[in-house]
Image (cartoon, rainbow, N blue to C red; front, side, top):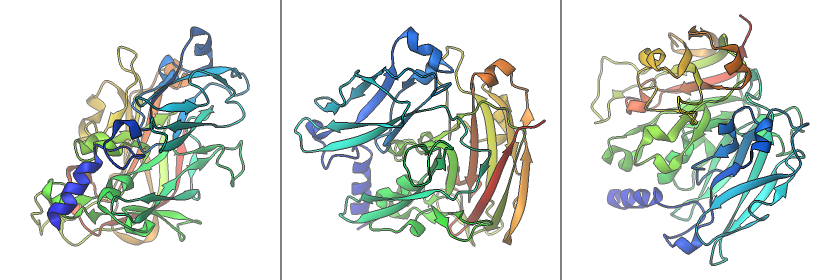
Length: 395
């Protein structure tokens, strides 16, 4: 049975979300999207924002950040790279009006049997809110390789330009590792995943993050635990088995320089702390982790730059990274069964005003039920609850 699970999961990393087997003529994905032309650069903060490369096969929303929707051209000819042989509607490069909300694109496979839909969204929102209460949660169902249905929670923020019942204006800026865990789960409910919504937060709903066993596959690959992790950014499931740390892409553009972040938590560590070889350490206790990074989102060559799990393996050395301006960390999160307030202040270099104004920096905010989860060390059963998180900008 163990070998069967491993074989199935290994197949996942080379499949896209819209096909049943590895037949090229059944693929139907958007791989990249971009806006061409110097006349359109004025609508974006930076030229790098005009391109979205390596779009995840699990992503259904493609988001472009613009300076203003009021001044945005109503004739944007979006260019799209789709998988070989597939067709797309509306036509590739046809002028579209993105000022009225998402434009839905449908990609159909070469054999006509498979299709996927994408919402392409142009938004003037960077960080969608200064306070995150995690009231907005969407449950999605995904069919598993074994024929069952997984139900997974996705968290989003609602912009002020839309009503709470509409998908228009939803910003899926929060990511989790749930899609990675789903590779070997079958017919699971949201509460069976490492991250899910709870009805009894500090105020209204909250979020539960818990460290789980990664099963036979995880143990075989020296990745025996899956820590509950919620962060601003995106999760690329296609890297889970080949390079797990690359799966976590931290940060979203933010046009204001943060000073402090506060929130509320509850935490209890699991009983047995283990390493990647499942060796137990009776003298070690698991710890939760909350930290944030404010960093430059383009490199010296003006290419897009995103922090991933490799960059944050050693938080003590983050400020040595020339891309990083500031870092904030919660020093300690003692175990508690009651909602307890935490706060952290940013330390590091001041960011040049022109870079801040041009949204030249990303804000990464990360919560984890196991501090060493990225190294696959921690305790199964460690549980962190979070709610009412607020970002402050006044110096």
